[in-house]
Each structure stands twice: as C-alpha cells, then as structure tokens.
Length: 381
Length: 134
Ligand SMILES: [Zn+2]
Image (cartoon, rainbow over all chains, first blue to last red):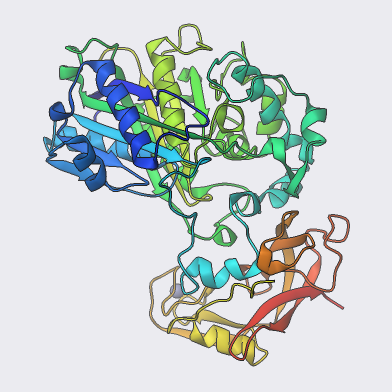
C-alpha cells in the first residue's frame, strides 16, 4: 500500500471494560462504534465501509443503520482487525469507499449473546486430528509448541514469567487495567498450574469489551478534530488451523511473512520503532513476536525482556496497556492492541511513551493460525 | 464420563482411519517430489501434484512438544494428561497422547523415542497413540 495514504481518525473502546453483563456481543460492537463515531464527530450515515469479525458485517451495518458500498468480514481470529485495517486502506485508496468503520465486541466473560468457542465438528481437520487427544481450549493448544522452543534455546520456564512481570508494571499505570498490583517472577512461577509449563499468570484474562476504529484518506483526515494516525505499512498472512502442523514450533511463519511485508511497506528499520504491541494471549507470544519480527535474534527475546528493554524507560516499550495478560482479553484481543497503538501515536496513552513517532502493532489469529501487522506513524505525510 | 470426542472421517481421510483400525499408521507420499505429509489429502502440499501414494509408516517417532492439561476435559477422565505433538521418523508431525508413561514433566522428556500404539474406541475408530519405545 501507499505509505500514509490512509489515517485513523476515530478510535475508542467500549464505555466500560472488564465485566459488562448488561451488553450482548453485538451491543458491545455498537457501544464501541458509537464512541468512535463521537470521537471524530461523525454519524453512522457518514460511514460507507464496514469491517468486523465475530459477527458479520451485515449484522453490524444493519444494527447501526449503515448502508455501505464496501464490506469486509475477514475472520481469522484475534488479528482480524489488523487485516481489516490493511484491507480498508486498500479499499479507500481504490475508491471503493471513503470512511470505514471497523468494530470488535465480545462478551468473553459474561457470554451474553455469545456463541460457543471453536468446534468445526468431528469431520473438520481439527475435529479429526486434534480434538480426539483432549485439547480443552487455547491454554492447552496455543501453548503446545513452547517446550520445544525452550529446549531449542536452552531456556527454562522462567522465560515465560518475565513478560507477565514487566507487563504488570505497565498495567499499573493504566486505570482501566483489570490487574494492577505488582507481581514478581516468584509469584508467576508459584501461581496455579494450568497446562504444564503454563501457570495461570502466564495466561491472558477473560473479560468483556470492545473497540472500534474509523479510517479515511490522509487528505480528508486533516479535516477531523482528532490528531490523524497514519498507516505507514501493513502485512498479513495465514499459516495453519492445526497447532500440531506449525511449519516450525519455535517460530511463527505467519508472523515472519506479515512483519517483513509491513516493514518493507513502511520503509523503516527496527531502530526507527518507538513503540511495539505484540498480541499476548499467552506469555510466549511476546517472545515469538520479538524474534519473528526481527527485534531479537532467535532465543534472545526472554533475556531482552528480562533486561528491561521493553519496560518503562526501556528502548522498546512493549504492550504498554498491560496487554492481554493484565489489561483485558475478550477473546479477539487484536482490537485493543490497535487502540493502544493509536493512543500512543495521539500522545494520550495512560502510560505514554514520550515522543513516540512510530508504533508497530502485531496481531495473532487462532493459535499461530494467522498474523496481521500494522505500522502507524503520527507524522504527517 | 461422556463418550470421548472421536473423528468423523471424510472421503479424503478414510484410508488413514481404516489403517488405524487395522493396526497400521498410514502416511501419504508424493510420487513427484517424494514429500511425506500429514494430515491426509489427495495431493501433495509441497508441490501440488495429485500423484500421491499411501504407505505404511514405521510408527516410530520422537516426542516433539507437549503440555500437561491439569484441567481434564470431561470426556478425558479426571487425571492430568499430556497433549503431545510427535515427530514421525518419516518427517510429519502429529498430535497424540503418550501412553504407558507417567504424565509428568520428569517422565516426558523431549526427543524420547516413541512407538505407535492403537487404542480402540469404537468399531470404526482406533486412535493412534504413542508409547515409549521398548
Ligand atoms: Zn510433491
């Protein structure tokens, strides 16, 4: 895509975050959408492009009274929204629509108007070749490659404790974080075992929430009341629906492809990056993300985090909202990573990185099934 | 205990599940590029050729990676169990369970040699599980 040809002009999360028993799934989408519209002074009738995952774009458009000329229902899990940003940028550049609304809402904890998790039936690939062996949700599947990763690089389980400890420090600065109290490596290593080697403090939260973004051309973005956040580069890829069939257990091929494409499009080097979000459903995701995006050599991300490079005051602040481990995680967390990147680029994040100009936002979909990367800049083209 | 979740074979995978019932681990191999692959499909995922053959694999594997699920799924009993990925001698990886072995990190060492062991679940379905090689 063309650098900085499209910008985020509206961005907001749901009014409440965490436990929201009074809103259904589609209600969370709508609450976030209305907040994002208010953020940039638009009405639903000003929107002519819609994209969402979890519900269909048809449901979203009709519920809000939008009659779009472009719709995208790309549904590849938690990074779907990164792909929506990428597709929306292309659609706007191609003239398919002018103003795109992307929404997420998920009653992850309260399960109001929510479907059941997973399940393609016994004849699906997953139903035939994984489910018979007893996986019981993401904590017992997404985590399976990690012992191989640890052995390959001579690491111990403590490598999985550091991301949780450092991100909790960020979360403490965020009033909307679910968890704010400091934790130590010992706390993580002594927390309840969920699926060896994963303990509960290495696993994400389960909460309710939503978020929405509004994008338009960079030219039109100048007329909005909000500070435009330009899309500098994007990437996407998909890998496998089966965790047992990753091309390499120690690295996400989809991350590598998506990240490389986004960096190429953005025309930046790693040293140019001021802020990083890596979707952290579990504590190994930041390790894979740092390595597969090229910020660290293979096997070195845990030490990189331990040495406080991603902590407050570090050279690469990462997951500055507290992440899925401490801030919130509704199921498809990618939208919240995007929201935090936008806040950092607007200069309004609760834990603002001083002077940040470029933010990289990396999402994962399914269990290493898909990846999406969006690189933002707050400097005008 | 509810009945265990079992596979529902499709035309493309039927030969694999028939093999398990008959005590054979069947893989597929490309006649063009000789790639062995899994799960079954009627073409080679490496080169796209439809010219593939089914063959009996050795059943030998090593323990590639795993977790020990401390919160058993209702159809899997009440004790913690490992959900494992094994790497077959022929190259492909597959998900399975490890049997005849304590379900502990101490007993389950990565790269330990394993041998397939079929576990009858119904008249149609036997699951390919793996035990430490003798
Ligand atoms: Zn081939």
